Image (cartoon, rainbow over all chains, first blue to last red; front, side, top):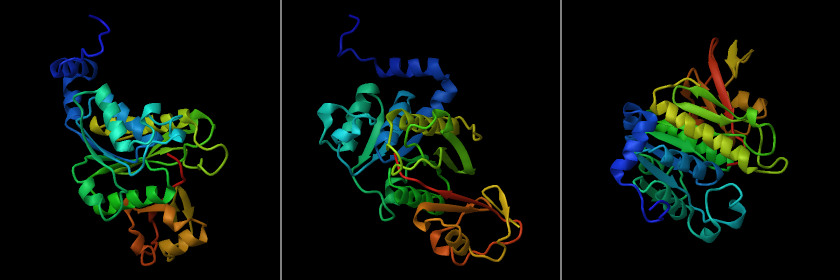
Length: 217
Length: 64
């Protein structure tokens, strides 16, 4: 019965479809990787959905905030989720996309007092905050205190400037930076969904390339 | 000479903090890598540039 909503594929069918798409070896690496997404706004919600579709092993989802009507133009939530914790709303949405995804949610403000515990299981950490100081803090923390992990951060994706200015730069061995590095949310018209999604796609793509051991950009 | 963000600068003997302040960076918004290793913020004042150092200063802007 094509189109029946409650007919979801079995786990075996799900894995088979991903193996067919990515190849067994690459898919095995993807599905054995844990990624932490720090901040579940325009960047983080889009990163999480891309990685869930790719069959990532586990997502650690971190945000203290609730879904607001002003989020819906760029963040992967629905009108009927306004007022929900972003962690719970995104977990629900991800389960609808990939019912076999493992998730762990933390409805907290990530800081130096809790980051080591919350991020302990992550192989790769995506910085997806909106606040510049918070971005700098988590990047400094991970590179200083968790030197075996990769961090994929973002800076500069506001406004309606050219899509082609969004890029990925390898700053050092375990630190990648996506964005145009200059377009600040406080300048101009603020965040435009398409450019934020481009930056999120750069981050998710960098995660997949690290998993594939393609370390250059 | 010290190579900072791809540019050769005459800042040998200066500390990371001195360079960042004199260049107008907001210290709360930066990450600094010296020869591929992060410089913890607590060490900005005590870390002195030497000839041949390679430095990356990443300055974050808001939005996400």
